[in-house]
Image (cartoon, rainbow, N blue to C red):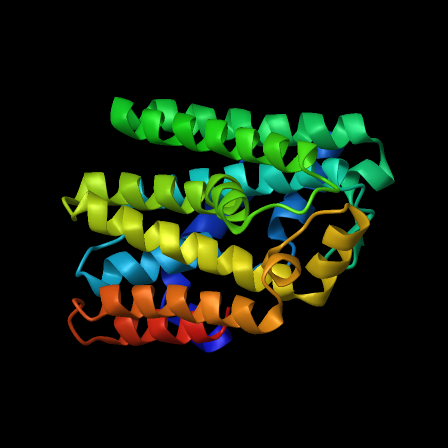
Length: 266
């Protein structure tokens, strides 16, 4: 993964600096949020978008960097909320904010990150992009609510995919559509790539031991419970094939290879 991230090192450094610079002041929560948002992360949403658009010859300028920062803020806000929803005491081997302080602090901190994202969206002065992210956050919330009320019930694969699309790929889609709009890249193709990548990411994540344990504790059913392990891997292979087919249209470059390697390292 580190080798892949080197292809986007300059852009990721700009994103990390942009995130860190938001937390200026002596407030205790700013210190906590700075540590939280800078804890070791893959920055998978930003990394994937950078490789995708650089693979199409796009220069990652200021507006695109701001979109990626907005995406990271919304993602991290959702993690702070998820920790409360899932009663998770640890994240990346560190105490979660709700375990360290209270559920209220974690939820309000997530809201604070969303307010930072909203401010940046307003500064972009692009109504379509604002709408993309408004629909995204609505989809994320609705999917999490739907998943909560389905706890303890064995869902259908269609319900699972709908939830995965809402809570995970909707943010990928908002980021990719916004970047495509600004750079005159085909929005429909960018959105379909983002949707498939987001669902694939969720499928792979749900097979990881830590996620599987959390899902079991919270009585959340995933494809391995619905289809079995073998058919789940077939489903994953189908999404991989769709994404690789999309990449066939890309010119040969280190960024196209980086995307291929990223798929293999999810």
